[in-house]
Length: 227
Image (cartoon, rainbow, N blue to C red; front, side):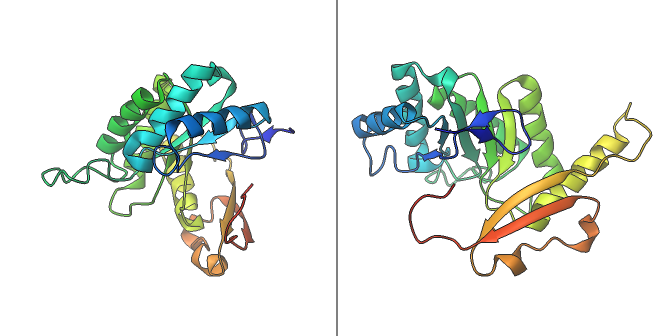
């Protein structure tokens, strides 16, 4: 199977990703192991899951499968954070979201379930306007600096929310002690959106015109493969 670069990074991934949402739910462990093995044999090296999928069971099965077949080093492993991992805990108001507390706590939990010491791609599963994007970005940056996360990303963010994050990062770099006294380069973000309302819903506001955002809109499929 051919490979391509993951975004603007230097890491190569297969053009197809194995989605692991059903593992530990509708798809039991033995069948999940078989699916993962067959995907790897076919040349897929990109596995995608989330902490909230079947309340962590999907991550556990993916971790067990990679430990069982010895292919962790060959796999680009992606997971997500945001969802409520303690739905029955009525006393904890901080059991979901994109706060620093939630991101750091859930990253550690995902590492344990996945039986690995690093996550290749750690994604924010849903936006949370109540949490400042600066807080979310700093928590993700600390995970990258610690070596527990290699790359970061977002899921279901509107284009203007992606651009806002890029603008905040530019602001942080320009005001950080030791930053070069020059205008920072404008980042290019390549974003793919689907759905009939995407061209209106995902338009970035003018206040974020310091970043160049390339949007490509495609119809969302009813079912099948998304590449």
